[in-house]
Length: 382
Image 1 (cartoon, one colour):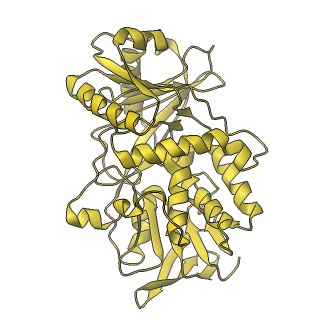
Image 2 (cartoon, one colour):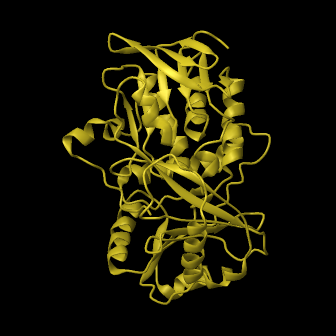
C-alpha cells in the first residue's frame, strides 16, 4: 500500500466514493480510499435506497433536488458499464394526523418555491396513485413524481469505477487504527496495512464517524442507531411510488424485479453499533405495513437485515473540519438520508476543499451550530 497521499478518505460507501470522484475530477492527485470491509458494505449497502426531494428544510430539499438531477444522468456522466437502476416512480407521503398534515403543507410550500414538482393530493387522489392504499383515517398526502430509488451497490460501483479511471486508489479490507496529529493538524493515518502520511483526512464512515473522531480526541455530536429493513419475494408489478407514512414510521417500495423493500423505525431503539435483525422488527413491520397497504399481508419475506443511521441532533448532516485537528473533515450525521443527497454533498465538499465557489453555504452544516444552539431541525424524518 502507498505510504503517502494528498487525501485519505475513510469509508467506501456512497459518500466516500462520490467525494473521491469529485475531488479527482477537480484535479486532486494521490487520493486514497480505505475501507475496512468491501465497498458498499456499511450503511449504503444496508439502506432502503429511496431518493426523495420532499424535505422540510431548504438545505436538505436543495441537496436532494440537485442530487436527483445527477441520478438521472449518472449512467452517462460516470460512463457506467451497467445500470444504476434509477426508477422515478415517485414518493407518496401520507399524513394520518393533523400535525403531520400541517407540516406537509409547510413542506410543499418550500419545495414548490425551490422548483420541486410536488403536489398536495386528497385521500381519493392518493388512492388513484396507489389503488391498494388504505385511506381510512388519511387526511391528505403529497406526491412528487420525480422521486424514486436506485440500486446502492451499482451507484457505488459506478463512482468507484469513474474515480479509479481518474487515478484514485482503493484499499479494501484495510482498517483505520489511529490518526496522527501534531500542532493542531492531522499528518498521518494508521491502518492495519501500515501508515499513510497525508495532510487531509476525510471521515465518511457513517455510524462509525464518532469512533474515528475519537482518534483525535474529538467528541462528535452524533450517535449510531440501528434501523432494520426487509425484502419480500418478487410479485407482479403493482406499485410505482414509494409509500411513506411518518405516523406509521414506515416506507415501502416495489423494486424493478418485483420484490418489496420496506422498513419501519423503532422509537425505542437504543443507541449503539448493533446491526443484528430481530423478530420484534418483523412483527412491527408486518403490523404497520398491512395497516397502510393491506394487500401485502400474504407476501413472504425473503430476508431482513439491520444497518446504522448516523444521527445528528437536528437530522441534518455535519460537513466540517474537526476543531484542533485541521485537515480532518467529517461528512456524517445524515440521519438516514445520506444515499439520496450524496451526489451533491460530494460536489459541495469538493468545491470547499479545492478552494472553489460553493453552490450553497456549506457553513450551515458546520459543527459550530450545535454550540450556538442554531439547529437546523429536519421535520420530515421517521
